[in-house]
Length: 277
Length: 334
Image 1 (cartoon, rainbow over the protein chains, first blue to last red):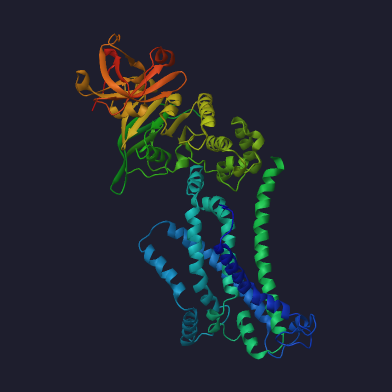
Image 2: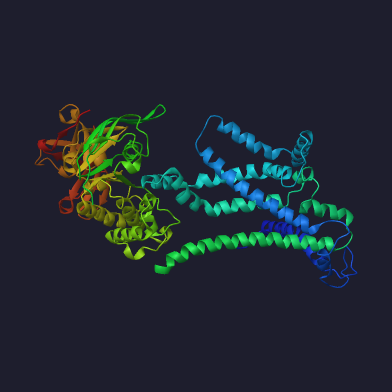
């Protein structure tokens, strides 16, 4: 019997996986292709020539939509969410390492918010601001709404990170005379840094493409997902696809930069070691 | 280097909730001696070490290092330094920065602390690896760096938590020799936790056998081996058969060293004789190890000199007589 022969299951599963990849990247690829539509082209195939016309068009005054402004707002919001998520997830992670009274209940309370439908969170926060007579803004109410999503996630990840963290490092630091703050500053944070960069990236991307939680909370100025959604109903030219392509490229760039940062960090540590080794 | 400190435990007790890990032990470790805390896992030896180090709160009793009670002092104030089981070298720092860590915490200037760290690395023969990261070192090299990092604090007592268990057997023997050499050279007190009686025998001036949170026996290795106080010590130290005394006309358990037993027929030149069946047989080069099924003993081993065994070889399943002298019988406390 030939044991290396692949059975039917292999081909079925391979086909299934191919479909999965196709559905994952097919739509994005379609939009990418269509964004190079000629100046006379429409929203669907066939391609009517190939051009960068719609990318140019994107940076000109639009009849509807404010692409540049919404893009800047989304990035600023994403960065704020990123910083706050990392900061508070880590602080909460430290707190939860020591069992305190009610820590279990508090944890479930925090994580249970993940299953609340996001549109309800959005609606609730919008409503609350209304009742309190506050103006909803993307940097206020929407920021809060995003944090209801990223903080529990960040907390879960930080729990996993701390679970893998060997407490002997902290004991060693204490043994060598480090104060609690010195231990955190010189031992715990540097060791966890790569993982924390991951938490930050996660927080940023969750916020950057969040739609439902922003919908009722953004106030008068749109974030990018809201803007794109608005444009799908109003804009009838491939400029929409150009926007889609550009933001996708941007997302990949951000992830790429983070990965490069991680590699550079590792290189830096290794190079210092190799220099004299 | 500073001279070693005495360490004294007075009714030292550690409880985790209702579980008692260390049950009120008394022990005095002389300055500059090499003490091994020995026992099976869960016997309380690691909890004891961690209480001495200050990484575990003392539930009850007193801990004296030098002349002062240090129960509530933080680790760095006790004049102890600990080498952790997995060494716990900081993975993001190179060897120099790892060793210099305690100096940095004290605010010693960079040049000064790097110079002293380098000198300390030279002492453990790691000078040329100063710029390596821990992940780029072998287990033995990591251990040397961990030693240097502990010693740079100039402790009076060095605490070692199973320092050799992460090494392969060959390296273990070599590092054992180096620990002993280092101990002789710097003259401070070493307290070394291990579950290996070989390690304790090879290293200790004072071996402390622990069981269920209590000290079964403390003394020089030779005393433990030749005069085990209890059946537990005799079994744990190894090289002994524990026999129910009534089988050989006495009372209470007694111990007989496995290498003092001879096999043979009626003309054995020994006063005490038992009969048994050979269950297993192992050739060890210089000696041959036999396991016998003998009434009155759970395990009964005989270690015969190779030449003596092959003068009159036996096979598995044979009925044999085993005998030994009256003076080789060592009574045990229950």
